[in-house]
Image (cartoon, rainbow, N blue to C red; front, side):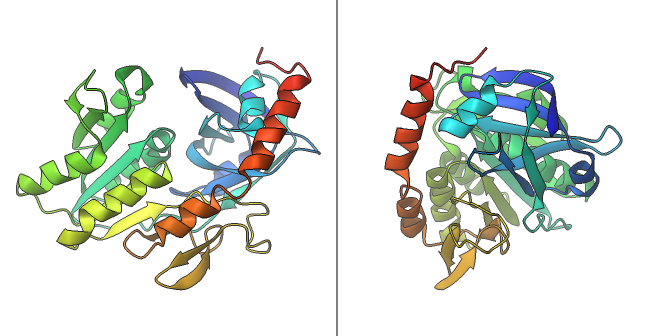
Length: 279
């Protein structure tokens, strides 16, 4: 059992949990993820590791409430436990001295980007971080990301804070300003990563995306997370989660993510009908 040590509601529907997992914390690296199951009957879902404490033996996960499992995870309190937690999984982000690295994140991707931006900065890169949200009240970790970035750009869809627009608009702003981008790393919802890849493609900017396809076992055996990259079938859990954003078949990925939509709705209704509510 993996005990919840700390819990925080960051913004509506996005939460942070710190869990005791010493063996995972010992090995975790930027870009990796874990797969959790709340209890013996729960589904397995992947969550990116947002931070870790090797000495304290804990890992931090930031997630958005989407379906039954994430709502159940949000209902846990300090002292409660998660039945199963496997990791770290996936190939870590390749950290090197590239030059100017632009790290972009939206929603839960803001937190998932933190260890990558930090590691890129420690490696001697100029790090420009860009975060987006639909409105100001959905932004978080602005100060934290600012500390590990040479420049932090914030954008909101409704213009309620900072620049109005979305991440691709800010990427174009950097390019129009004459700054050379050597690497772009994007984390967040699939559609945002697709648009970032399309924005960087005409300029030949190497673009790495972290795919969040549906996973079950996380070891390459079930095939649920398969994606098409450069015309080849890859498994996001063992070949990724990092891939070349210019090679991903985004339309196929988006359609596959809707594959269990009816089952997910049914599961959520069943759980809510049993009277479960966050405490």
